Length: 407
Image 1: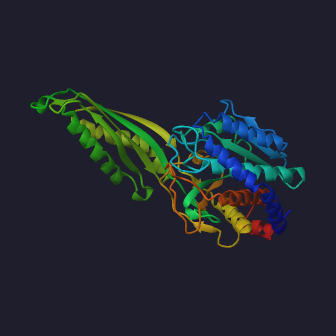
Image 2: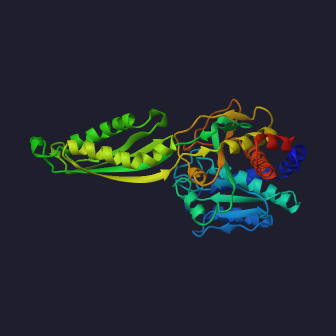
């Protein structure tokens, strides 16, 4: 199968299934499940894959699944979707509003899941017809928001034998029918830190007899981010931003301990790997100057998603083929975190941004209770991901080979 024939097959498939896919997305939206609790979601996906003649394998914790389409001969391409929801209240007035208090698909994972399901069903048809020259691994990943789901997939062989991996994420700033792509880093690393400061407390009338812990903590809050900006290449955009500070219970009493918590974000992979040791060293230096003890609890989050050049070329060619000229638009690197980055530390691949905004429509930002999408984006996502998988299997080589194969 080549370009025009593939487009015709996708047209016919979506004419029959698009409304069913929209209904599937709405069902997921009405029944959101949080990280590592996606039991119903996993069951619904497994039922549909099994009905299509596939053999999904649920991950050991009971949420998320992996399923192969096609034979083991030739290359193996992986497609990934995340399936978990956010702990937010759904604020929309729509028929498919969340029925679960305090849980909502406010990041579009219901859309990602539905796109991959539709792609899976189409690829299953192609495999049955003998038109799949290799194997596609479908990864329905739990717990992206925790994060941790990607590591769970990898720990159980999810990317073993995979040559290349692709994924996408809803982008409410991009119109339906367009895909945002970028070579190199497209998201940021994101870690959490907690600093606990301790020292002798006392009366505010006699700060010289104490460590004056609140003053010392204030210095850490201001001097640590400032020192980082002078110790790291500014092009890495390594930033420390505090979100929580707790110290003391009375205006006239200097406490003997305090805590500050925040996030560390970074656009550069090398700077991200060096960040824990550097922050620990700077913290000890600042704390020592004010006579307090400071301990650092550094929790790794996710590395930046760094798109491989050839994989971006494959996605770009597929999007142009599936959606037409002008479908690919440049996108900026985000400071948001995404655990797809763990896969790309092991194998090449690319992560795209799926346009979900109605042209000239309202932008509903992610991680908000009002978030929603133009559901035409589902079919667009299926077209691009199916085309990407097939063309990647046809040709694993220079872009010219891929483009020629699709002509």
